[in-house]
Length: 128
Image (cartoon, rainbow, N blue to C red):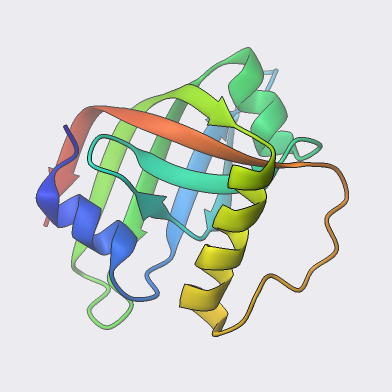
């Protein structure tokens, strides 16, 4: 179950997150991302050609840090793993929903490959 403070950070307002994945050589790769959540998972939407997706296909372990846009010392960290991916119309609709929350309009960037939702199950959580 996702901590309620972390779920609120991920679903309320325009709070950014940093997603850290593991590169093939073992070094971390961190990317700023939009974030969302359901009751059990953090949700990150990306494209299948991007490095972060290739990284989680090989090694699903990730860390996500979300900070409050208005009070950046309030944050939540989830260490977990990608337990499911969702593609197709659901992923495409999700990026539009995220874009409307973060920018006020549908997602405007060209899609180069295919949208995918990464469902991240927490293994360790901390919220401040």
